[in-house]
Length: 261
Image (cartoon, rainbow, N blue to C red; front, side):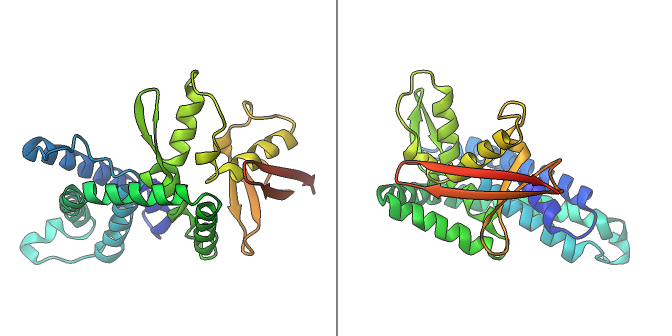
């Protein structure tokens, strides 16, 4: 996500910025690991910033490239000016960000767990809160800042699956699917993305291929300018795709019709 965010936000040199974002994300995580080894904070075995760390690093790298890409340094430092300045300053920023995460992440992580538990305990109201935020940010094209927090962080819940703690609604869903001993419905977690998965499966069946020959990763469900769900899939750009999603307390269902022009 770090690389995709950087490439999507920057206006030029997308390849360079994407690579720089990847390297800085690695530098940040390596710095966090070194700090854990040096200071050994009690009760903290690892710090995984996940999607939040990706968003922060991606935005920082884009800002640095946009603001300092053509910077002119004094003559005796001229070799380090321009594009050479960015890797230096972005590396320093990555280490600084790692220090901030090292200080605040354990407490912030606990806050996410508490909020996630509150949202889960609210039932349908919690689901409405998630959907409201998703539609609100989707109106300005920022929906990708909301759903990853529920899908991949403690905000989407935590669960013990196969003896291991799993965080994030989608991660829990896939872990439960992979656990042959798990029984029961997944409605506690899948309510944060059930409609999209139902839509993807309906689209795959409408193509006549089905899931397996057409992967979930090849199908993207996004709201249009009016908030209605739309489907983007390679090879179907010229087709009219009509989508309908409905929810009940425990189930999500979707219908997809493909009309070739």
